[in-house]
Image (cartoon, rainbow, N blue to C red; front, side, top):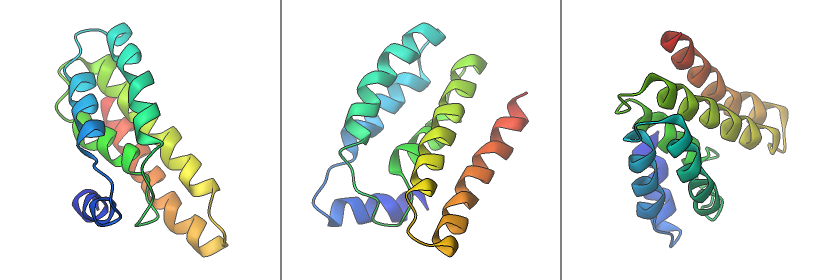
Amino acid sequence: MYFHTRKGIIQAGFDPGFVEAIADSISSSDSLHRAKELFRQFNIEAEKLPWPQDTDFGALVLQSKSAQASNIEVKRFMLNEAILRARWCATCATSGGEGHARMAHVNELKAELDKCN
């Protein structure tokens, strides 16, 4: 889903590279405080990207990059923020079926977060 959504964003004329670079910095943060500081900029940039595949790319990036986090608090933070972004995406659905499909990503993220606890 990550690369499929990334491709759709590029085809729509947007560059996801900056959002990915910030997420890399978040995942390599040595403290939760630093990760939260970087996240403010991440959110600003991720909000500029469309949802070409009905999935929030910001949530996908946070999920993907959280696997690289060596600090477990940072990893949990990234997954929690990904859940919030994916949940927001799901609430913007225009039909029940679409909302249900978007909630699949939220459930996937919750399961991944549960593995960290």
